[in-house]
Image 1 (cartoon, rainbow, N blue to C red):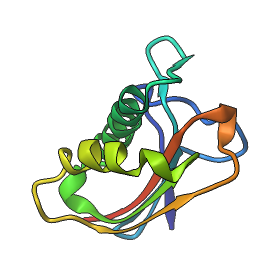
Image 2 (cartoon, rainbow, N blue to C red; image 1 turned 180 degrees about the vertical axis):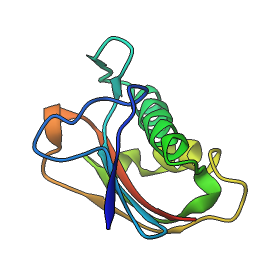
Image 3 (cartoon, one colour; image 1 turned 135 degrees about the vertical axis):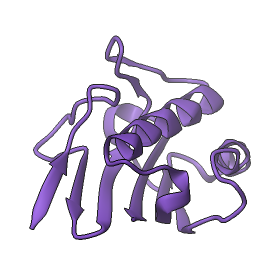
Image 4 (cartoon, one colour; image 1 turned 180 degrees about the horizontal axis):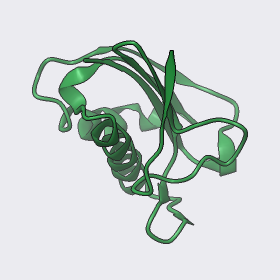
Length: 125
């Protein structure tokens, strides 16, 4: 049985999907971009600002599911350009306590709303 996870502390979906879906003890979080849920403003241009906002959005969804970053087992990072890798990586690692999840990072041709970073996660209780 699946349960839809939804919080006002992360941006509403911009398409036909949910912020996250819980099935059993697994949480599947849809890709998050740098939209500030307080005012729906898209934060573009500064990869560090974008990355922090994405991680805050992911944290809000994890919290709604009564989890945190220690529950994350898999992350997918999508970048508009691999030149952002080092900056994103530097910020990303600060949200974990050293027990990092499995991960891939890829550069793609384009991302929704022309953002520079999108991150999705899988977590488990």
